[in-house]
Image 1 (cartoon, rainbow, N blue to C red):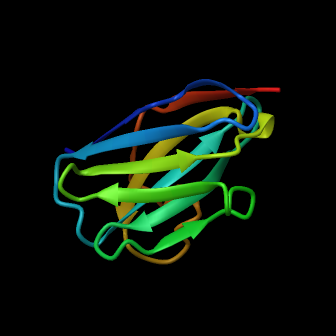
Image 2 (cartoon, one colour):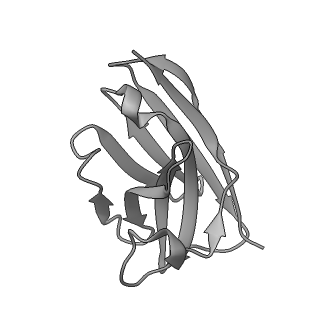
Length: 124
């Protein structure tokens, strides 16, 4: 059974930084894509970034490109999202997700496994 557990959310001032972690367990993730998505109140769940587990290929939403960095540590079975230069509009619940490699990795409905989410609040 795949489990994804996020941590690292919190309250930060605009311009600050946070690092989110996603501890993954339950299988080996070779051939998988790991993603971060976010959902603000009253809005749909939006794509943030993805990384392929085996090769580390990354892909970012335009809104976070240059500010956020996704990475993974194979030895720790953990995916990270380093968030810098945070803005109030980054406020959301952030979710970690996993799926087998393939097309349309920015679509949340293509992911099989989800974590419970971690709240990120950026104050102005």
